[in-house]
Length: 342
Image 1 (cartoon, rainbow, N blue to C red):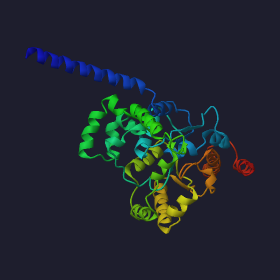
Image 2: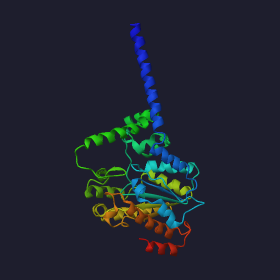
Image 3: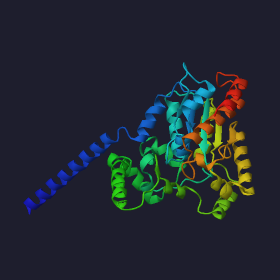
Image 4: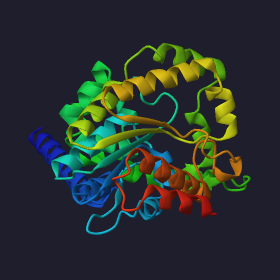
């Protein structure tokens, strides 16, 4: 009996050592994960004149060098820092803004790009969804961020446990490799699936509303509601930092515009959203029609490189018209160069 108890505790101790070792290994492997790389960029953005926030639409749709060139944002200021990140929501955007401001960033202009009802939708999460780029919710001001999204009672308890262990908080470092292998094996002998830098193109179809009717109902509900708390707080803190703030409704291909935007309900929501933005001294820009050709999109929502160039040039022109003192070029010369650009 004594031998059995001793073996039990020795086995338990060995298991605990393995778990501790695994936790250290995961922490080491994820020291340069995408969220942590973005934190490093935000930490070193003190000299940026412009800061950009949003999701993957801004990652591929905003060309920072083109924007800087158009507005002549060069040394001694360092132009634009793009802190947009794929597969994120306004809570993460707020956290990266706060992190940049806490480390001395004082941009003159903050650009926030969005699509559909991103500004107004309640953020509901579960622990199984806090993975990948959402991992930052576990380790960047986790207590502060919790007030801006909802977890069930069970998930709240799990969250407090999981955020304290790297092997749970950064579990996607292992999961993503397993998922890639699974897709490679599952795709053997199957027709080729179109992909882009974010994964399978078909996956982004899921980001659209299920139907025009369902979207219209959501729009009707949002047309009288305030922004989600994370967006309102981001707008407040951005304005409080002394920056000019611009909210940009991102370009969409024709299918999306016809199904979801070409309605009286959506136009009513646009007026509501723009009034909320203007009420806090910020600017609302409707860029949904700026890129008309579907050939300039890589899927149902993302611009391709050529589309990104066109959008960025038009955004630079619009920014220069509203804030002529931001760049180093006269409005007339910028407008003339825009017209002669291919």
